[in-house]
Amino acid sequence: MTSRKTIVEFDAQSVELFNALKRLLKGSNPRDVTNKEAFLVALGYGFHHASKVAEVKRSGTGVRTEYWNDRDQLLMAAIQLFDSGKVESLEDLDQRYEVAERYAQGGILLLKDLLEREHSFAQEFAGEVLELLPRRDPEF
Image (cartoon, rainbow, N blue to C red; front, side, top):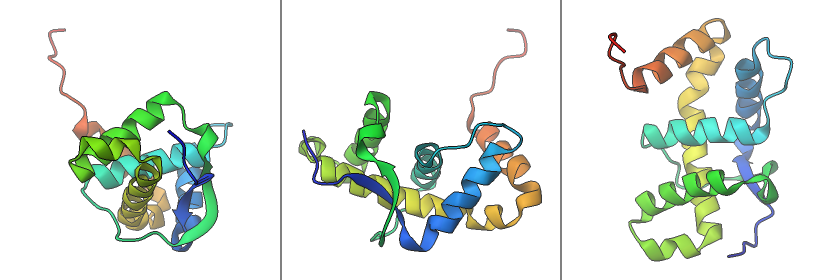
């Protein structure tokens, strides 16, 4: 399976939002957050909230396709399958990347308000993520 794409892109209007997300996710960690990590956060957030845009305006900025590992491909394939409802769609790698771009853009737009409140981003975002985690029985 090959793709004509060399990069899975951030929307041109949202490059600065992705940069803000990377800064805020980094926090006090000395290691920078990668474009791939920011993209996956936005993708997951957009998919969880069923938010995708109709079209992504190309920016030339994003994640080079060779950086996607098998686990990343599996995640994007699952989203692609859910989105299309057709197993045959999994053969189309370009469609997979396009669907991922559309959900990532939907996710970053939903995170926009949170990103603008830098002082509470980590707390609010972490709270929302914790809500998604299964509750553990206190006896264990």
